[in-house]
Length: 268
Image (cartoon, rainbow, N blue to C red; front, side, top):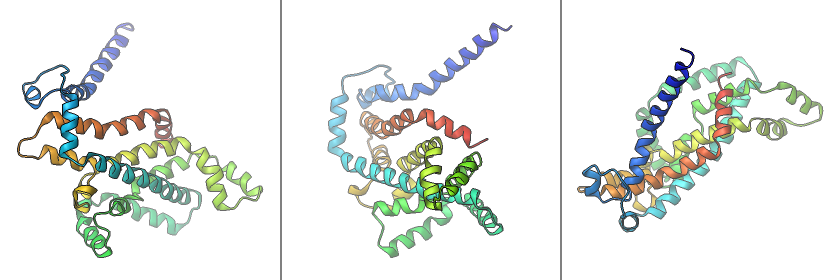
């Protein structure tokens, strides 16, 4: 029985891995085939990759969309990590009744669906003249209740002795945060960076509303427009999906060790 159990576990894991990876394999094969081959269910690589890439470049502003997505995701991630980590640090290190009430209200905001604030956000950014700009996409998400809570939970395991030693050495609160807290919490920042980057990169509903011209569209909007056409070319769509997916995959694999450490730290 002891020998059977590891075999069953490994068999289950292998099957789960195959099921999880199959859509990605199908996507890679689809980008090399014609739309008719994909509809017929062809399982194999074809020779239409370069043709599909050229057609995609001719049909869409792919370079502009990639640039827009990159700017929004990178700038948004940096600002979100900075502000959310400061908020989580402050809520956990400096306790008071007022801060506890404020944090409770912050947690309640997680229960509010985005649809409830979508129209007020649109009117506000329209009055400010910020529609159809990356700023309109980044600003509503630069601080989220989830990310503040994530940093707060990780800060619970932060050794307070380091802060006390820093104060003895004469460091002010800003230098304590930047020179002691930030380097110590690198795994937390890595995990938060992956989550935040993917949220910005894959964001669809609000960019669809806020970005109104073709030259400002992001990659998810380009993929959506290709898929919603009257006669969609699935080979071209598969190329666009691969281009959209690749940056998130690369960043995850580069930071996966820190991501695991950061996620484990958040539940201690």
